[in-house]
Length: 237
Image (cartoon, rainbow, N blue to C red; front, side):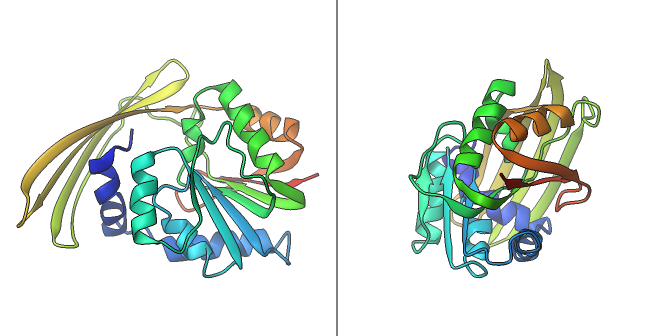
């Protein structure tokens, strides 16, 4: 999922739908500094094109991001050449240093694949945190919350383009299969259409908390969050 065409219009669509990256970054940093007031470094895991990371960089002295999709990283480096963006898998990346805080936004943790992948990701997060460092993870839906067959859609006009998105989500085992159709039209390139298909794992609250505990992170589930799916917030022992 997240090929070249999707990466190109990703931010335009979600900002057009009202996603406020500035407010979300401020909320996360406030939450982090409520637990570690001297936070001066932050790593954003599965950072996409770096939209949150760019905002984090306006609030925290040193930031870095890691992202699996090469096309997302390419777009991010083009948009934000001042940012430290690394291409890597959340399950096995190693930046060779630790941070005061680690975030994983926009339900990206669901891309860890299965329970073993979740545990590997949690371990990577823990090993990139200083003792007393703070983790904030925005989860995907849990199995009991997910609505099988859910359909979503929207149309936005932004940056000289009209972008339409329609998606269908279905449960496949312990995961959500999301099929997304995008239609994009602009004066220069005309009308084009592409499809993305992805899998996001449906983890239980117990599976999340167990994975974080095994990674040396004392975590709790907090209701709310930017997407209303809650947050897992924890401190490295």
